[in-house]
Image (cartoon, rainbow, N blue to C red; front, side, top):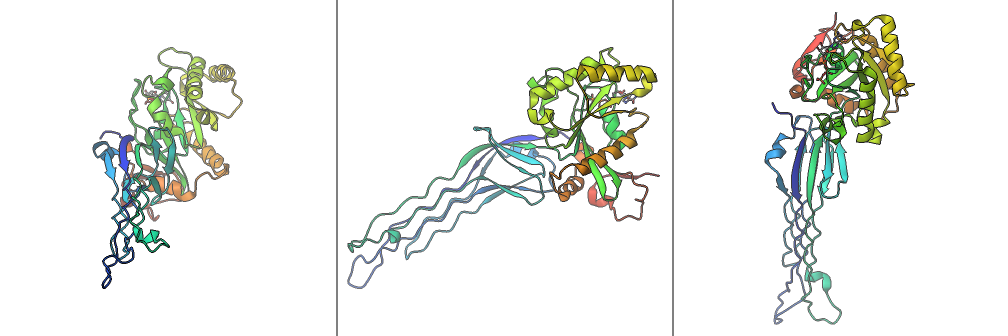
Length: 385
Ligand SMILES: Nc1nc2c(ncn2[C@@H]2O[C@H](COP(=O)(O)OP(=O)(O)OP(=O)(O)O)[C@@H](O)[C@H]2O)c(=O)[nH]1
């Protein structure tokens, strides 16, 4: 299944219906008072978030969407019918961007949320509106205005609390496997991760977070090198970034230089991303001795001027990963609530099977008797012993 996270569409709201010129027919009078009705407003085009959808693939094929035109006015002062709105269903997490102005029109973050992306035209006025004092029947009327026409890019952003950043092979996929039950491909060659993986880390029945792994970044990613840039936007909504650093890269590269590369890409991409809360996570501690690890940590933190939190783990053997998950949860729960709880629930309920989402119940107090129905989620639930 191809991962589709972007589609470009053209939307046209309905034109407003025209007002008309019409006259009452009265006995012995050829033309009575004006009674031409107003037109109806044109229909609007909306996006509506729907948790049952998880890709934008349909919009890659159907690119043109039009709302109904308002009906023209009618005689006997009847107003034309308003045009029907066009409602386009999109996955929760979709952002709409006006391609021509680069304006972000809005984000759909909650099931059922609606966002207008093209406004219908105003109705024209019928001649009944223009009754004149001179007793002369006016022939005046106005036409409806055109509906808005826009070229829109739909971008599907993952709704994750925590995002993983790192060079290819740093061990991000292994980490997401270690803390959630998502099963991304793991291999010791770069770019195993071609699509973002999303894992739900459930620490207790009502305490969970969503973690996203994006393909490894390489130098020049912010300008389009490798696969990184197209996925960086997925991290925009994360509340915490984990920068995963391989302490002993198999290609012989220097962990400190590698860390600098990642931060440069982050800086180049956007201030917003660069200023997000970030933790440094040293991975593969099993490959080095304790004092070597300390030396690497010191060199890396110095190279990037780092004074923030530092964790060291071995994702493959799950060393320190459970503690990392617990620390993450405690931390993000303390952050100001940027998104309501149900939004996280939306992400959990969201059928991310195409993105390898699984749900892991890590809680000791969560067992088979819990009201956690796998069928509802279309995911695999693993209960921890
Ligand atoms: N020794 C050791 N190897 C690890 C550890 N974590 C991951 N690896 C290995 O490192 C290699 C890369 O791991 P991945 O998890 O695929 O790396 P990634 O960062 O997701 O890579 P991309 O998907 O290409 O971005 C694999 O061979 C893993 O088995 C660890 O803690 N210790």
